[in-house]
Length: 451
Image (cartoon, rainbow, N blue to C red; front, side, top):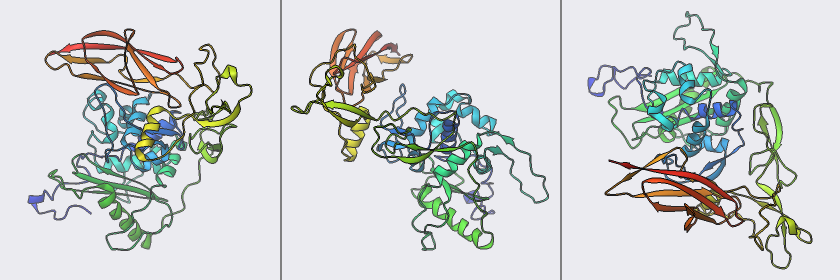
């Protein structure tokens, strides 16, 4: 559609909005999920954490500055949560997300290290043309094709860049994104054919995006000011989303979209646990059907639900070596950061009861919780210590089943809790976290004097 007035220099109306580089906001997140699916990291049902996340000094936040806790990957993408997308981007390999964008012919001027994990939330400016080519990759089953502006131009042969199964699954995930409630014309969009669509809002409220696919139709919307000035109304879902569906409705009156493509033959439906997103185990109380890519997708059976033995008299948990005479129950083994997110959200989740005694450390079985995992400090990261204001370093870890955690630095006890602050010091230190059953994890902290 172009600008409001091509000849109005005051609003830079002559700028070609299709070619102007702008911050894409969250519109690149579907491709992080597509690569994660293709690399066997997740399925659409995998449980992803929307909990506080730190990598060195980088501690990103969600747009709404809150956390939902564990979410299925589909929900995390549809709700456009930053933390799960950033966490997935950090795990991508061969190609990394930066390499994938380069393979797609996207011009981003800086090296991967200059963007880091912020690539997931729109730190690299790209054009509407580039975004349309990328979403065309999803629409064309992983085949990248150039845009054609004239009927007379020859179509490009394209090149396969993404696994067809991953492209289909991300389209299917995006089709769960609910439609806007109302259009600018006042009518409701209703629940017609599902549209696979995604919105984006740039940092500083300078760009509002919405891109949608249905059948063989692909529509992209950008709203903003060409001089880069912000506006509090420039929010993708609130402004660009209704515009997208108004356009789709208008196009459908003259040219209805063709039927959606059938799933690729490389996909398979299996029963998965609705809470963990993993293939069901014998202990899962509920089940649903979910997609996997055989030979690619993770297929570890559900480890959220596990049987435990309860002492009838006390209600406490019996050690594995004492299970005779106990009552077998199925418990949910959430990580401690997930339980905290549930608590803040007002959602009740029961943790396994405490053990009636300290169990034999040598005993290990499938029902035992894993050792705690240290999130911070991180091995291989140097933490700056300033002489005048040394500050603090966050120690944080997660434990399965709500276990209490105890922290030690060079064998000296420093405190209890999933998170605590330790006064920063220069030097090299051994950091150990131990849970109630004596399971421990260790990392090395390096404090470096900074100017």
